[in-house]
Length: 312
Ligand code: 13P
Ligand code: SF4
Image (cartoon, rainbow, N blue to C red; front, top):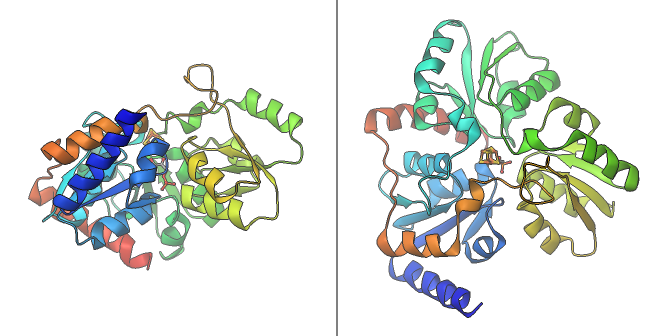
């Protein structure tokens, strides 16, 4: 514990010395969330990355999040605690294959979920997150044909909600699709008075039976605003850290993953690569640093900028 306290003190000291800001996603370890300057969902985090006046951004999340921060704030140094913290959704869409897919649908507009590489963002017309996907799709003319990538579950959910014609790329989040249908059914029998709330990266059958579907920030706000006292939370378990803090009297039950997951809940192995020690090292040595080639950055910036404009 004392080692932790020293690390935290050192991180706070270096942060001031280097004029750095620590941004953290809700899925990283609670100890990192506690020392972050801002914690949020992907939209909130990109808005912060675009607006910060700090000279350095330490992004505690996964690679595409640090990359997004660099695209939006190219003059800032962006470091992430672990370069290997990737994302199955981003990995599911290699740029060359996606470019060929896009070429097969020349009359379609490309909307990409922010969980993708800078190269995919450069091939995209408008980026979206789980909190603004419906709004962004609805901002387009009704007859507009759309390619949605890389998350097929989010894409199907948006297509069903908006009634739009969408071609889906077949990517998935390994964490959300691992939520066990059988264990969830059992939990619902044990807790018939609990509301089921879910992230739209979950599979269709889970979304169809959910009482509320939203991004991490949306789920957090819902739990706070609702009169209900009990919730089964179908997303990565890191969100429970802030949820428990905001609604200490309510009962929050994480939806269990299959037996492949190391905890009795659902944990993202990439998000969990962030540790206090790595945050300290990233701040101290200013690496690993994110770089994005300028030609790709400029194109990716356009698709992110359109999203930020539509989300004001
Ligand atoms: P949001 O926090 O934007 O809902 O994203 C969830 C996620 O899976 C991030 O990797
Ligand atoms: Fe990617 Fe899923 Fe992990 Fe989010 S939770 S970073 S979508 S693998």
